[in-house]
Length: 439
Image 1 (tube, one colour):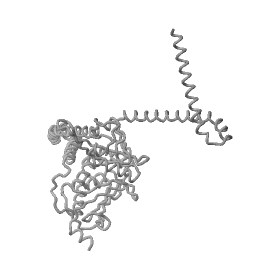
Image 2: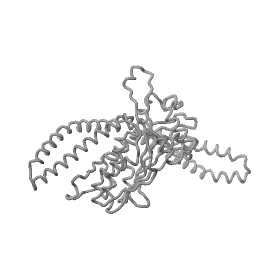
Image 3: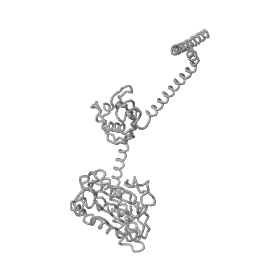
Image 4: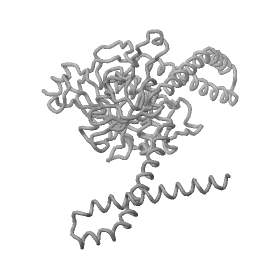
């Protein structure tokens, strides 16, 4: 009975297949019937080839559908978000990560709605429009504030720092990759807070150690006092490191720090800083040259700006070869070539040292970044007394002070000397400086 059922099913399947082939031949025959009898006969001969081509097209279509599904599965499990919109900014598809980042859990793939209706982010909408208009990849960063209809869920929804990279696609479509940078920022905040707490805890024991070292320094005779002097240098270096870290943390936490601004004469300030560092410069037979207006006044916090030039000139002294000159150039840029309401003061500090490597240049203002080993200063024992030892925070502090004054700073290599080239720009130029410069 089972064998009879098997053969019966097989016969029905073969019959159905033969019926499909007959129907296909009839359909092709009807298509070729308007042709002449000769062409009709030739067309009948082409039917097997057409059937093979149709089968190939079907197979290619299946392969493309399978590839498309594979790519969608890969994007769906990718660690970054991805969404795609059409030429009218209607959301076509987005992966799971994008749904979580943009709070689109209720969105269904079959829905066709404007992206701005689903995600209240004008920055994202502007990025997509800019990508479509320019037909080039674009990037953007912003803080995303999700919206929620359920008031009970509002306390649990937090703002996110997002970074997006978009690229143009055919037919006016745009694809956007989304990266949630909030976890990284949270980790950095926890790290900074931990380091700040640690720095506060270290100040008291370091001060106690220094007091003990000072007491021993007056009671020991040579050559034993040499070790106490060495201890004092290391303790001072640690105290300087802790204080620098606390200063930098305070500046970054409060970018608009309270500045005690007043009129500061730039040339006199630089001269005062050089006199402080002159004992270090004399060991290398270094000199300082200045070019620019003699009576140049800026509105700034004198103590902070003094700290800026102290760090910059100290670095130049450390990395300059003997018997060379460190050059400071100051000039006021004309307002005709920039959009600023007031003139811009530009200060260039150039040395003849080894300069920065190309890999270091993007990172020189990062905290604790020491850079190329060629710029690592290792003073000899005979020359180390009184030297200001670097801690990797000097340029980071300089940048924060300049930003607090509304200025900018840039690190380069000078094409003429091959040394480091630090360029500062200030906006707060006093009126008497302009009259001195343009008179």
